Length: 93
Ligand SMILES: [Zn+2]
Image 1 (cartoon, helix red, strand yellow):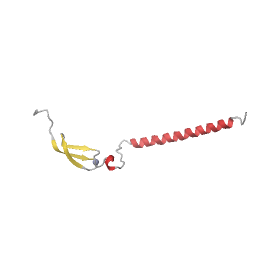
Image 2: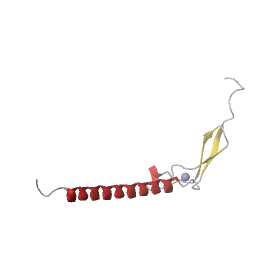
Image 3: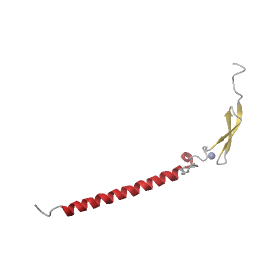
């Protein structure tokens, strides 16, 4: 094994999560800061949680609401058009 070229190994590297949980692992860096861990990840907790700092979820929900409004308006236009056509058509030939 080469003596140089290998990074320093920290067998007791401290991992700290944004949720407050800490545990140790082996790593080449002495401390690791993470945003999600197995204590707080939705896969293991079963609870929905958003790590949303830029308001992306909010923007998406706004777009969904706008799309629903447009769909409703288009459906109303189509219904009105069909009603007008039915009214304009002769009763019998
Ligand atoms: Zn966590």
